[in-house]
Image (cartoon, rainbow, N blue to C red):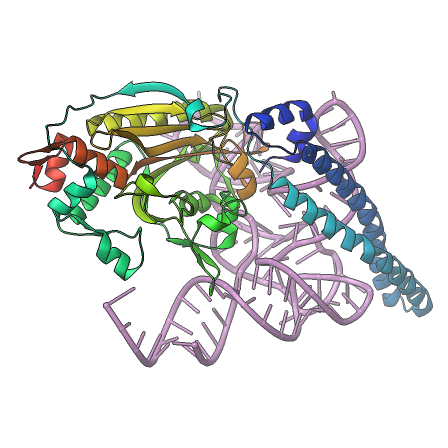
Length: 423
RNA sequence: GGUGAGGUGGGUGAGUGGCUAAAACCAGUAGUUUGCUAAACUGCCGUACGGGUUAAACUGUACCGAGGGUUCGAAUCCCUCCUUCACCGCCA
């Protein structure tokens, strides 16, 4: 979440930037500042009285020691009066603090200066394109047919076991998942990311810290008996490793990677958007996360974009990188680059990665800080990206590399898969 | 799931009602000294929200797993929860 001081010191600029995200309640900023003023005033009042209570209580102890009972009793009644006057103040403070928090979490992150204006995916800016779009042989088919042909994924049985959108991978299909996870993790750890296997369910505090709550409550599966949420991405548990910590400067930058299944309810989609592996409720993904000093976060963002780009190049897939416009960006992000691969048989672009800088938005919720050179405690910046989300990579690999003799896998996967062709 | 013992500052660890933001030691840091990749000594060394200051200094409040309660006063007593460890049960 945003810091009140930022709102207070740059009110006009904040409102301007919120408008780029199509946030339609700019007056909320003023309300928050007013609430914070109120909060300060109440606290000052409270502290003054509490201070008298504390001092007098000490005094009572001394008086008792000296056997001055009457004086002590008189002091006690003073304290009782002060304490009575503290009660309503305490209630008001709790109320104001709650209001403040409830409101400030409604503000999305501010978009960075480079974020293009716009409302829909059409307004995103294509930054780079790469790879060659294959010319498919006659009779080529989409991945959902290939999956059947090579007996790789059984959606019907997955639906029987759980429901639609829960694929059952099988045989070569299952092995390809394992292959990709292994390759992606190796690629990330070679670049200095430390590998983790996090819990796949998180508590409320963790979901709040990375911004899934309260904004995206309905998109997560909720295990109500224990009040746990199934993770929609490894970003949630892994970033939360550093919740409520003051990191030592020499530990920076923190680079982490993790494989996890991801669970998303994805309400409201239909048609060919959800056909085959295009959009499912459970999928596998390898994530990269960095927590860095604020001054370096944009350089790190560029590194991460390059890292993912090279990974896609190694898979020899046609891709493009988009800088998302204000209206299409996530709530918590300051800037986001989406990676899409071109699925040749469907003839459509599929999003396979999204790399974002959250600046201090998550770290402020998480209270993740460090001490800078001057000894001041400051918020760190957090970033993350997928490298990569598997199902759409699989869809694209299958469609783009189909031949009469089977699916030709890119060179880098041969040793992992133990073969170069899926037959 | 049952029983028992714990959860204190970066770490170890003292502290059973006021003299404790909290001993001591270690680590860290600044400095002094000794003719040298080290030792000794001295100071500093938690976080948050306020006040104060150009910035400091200084200063108020809260925080000893979390939340309640008792009390003039709680790290210390009581209750609930979370969690760690040990043993038992169950189990991949």
